[in-house]
Image 1 (cartoon, rainbow, N blue to C red):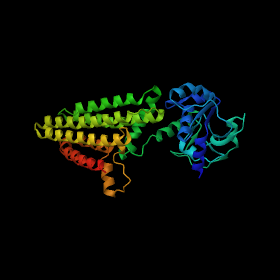
Image 2 (image 1 turned 90 degrees about the vertical axis):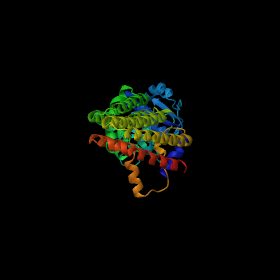
Image 3 (image 1 turned 180 degrees about the vertical axis):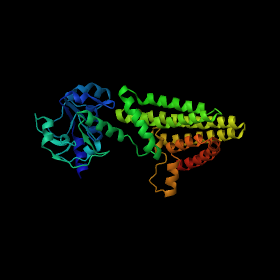
Length: 375
């Protein structure tokens, strides 16, 4: 009921992002706190945002981003957010009229409150009744006003970058590295497209070095392929942190992934052929390449037709319950897990076995993709 009340009110009223100090323009992981507050309000259901007090300094960058700004909010029930606070949209959605949320020290940072004519919206927050919640990755209200609380806020944002589609390797390894990298490059102005280009170079280099017959060079190639997999998360992380999304960003990211996959397997087939001085790896590599092209075509065709984007992680989504064996097999064949397995096999000198297995895996995935596309 509280969620319904919050959503209904937010859809009818302008959110008021209010600040009274320089902190509202202080960047936190690539975006000023005041803009983060505005995006939280919009994600919670507000149709417009009024930047008031010191937050008005963010008007130009907010307009450049296309945010629906309003000159002023009328008196009455409004969603009010401190412009120097970090609050989750999910928490704002849960507010009922008259409720406020406070940071861990009891300072009100946002609320769905009634603001009288001529009254300071921040004063209205002090009258609200507290909405009880436990701080976690989805529900948080923080006021990063010193090094310790700023560090906590950074940690909160980085933890929230994990996606439901992440496989086991991404959750336990890749994300730990990629978010560390993202936290250091996003303040430098790195964009998702810049990172995608770098990730593509890692993939190209991995495929090139994989053609070597030397075990050590092949291990280096597999390491580059693994780094490609890890850094592949950075472009999406930066996009989510900075709200810098593009219509074709997911498509470009998926194309880079697929091309890098195929280049590595074809390159490794050439490397094993040169190491063993036999022709079968080339034939197996050719079958793998053909199978992979078919998989890419089928999956992209379905996803683009249904969503208009290249976000292929949704290809295997289904409401139909799956047996345990299927879920285990699917998890082990996820891209993040599979690439880590490839690195391990090359490291122990099993590159020929990997080349021998890949055609069967490619053909099997092609058949499964064809059947899934027809559902």
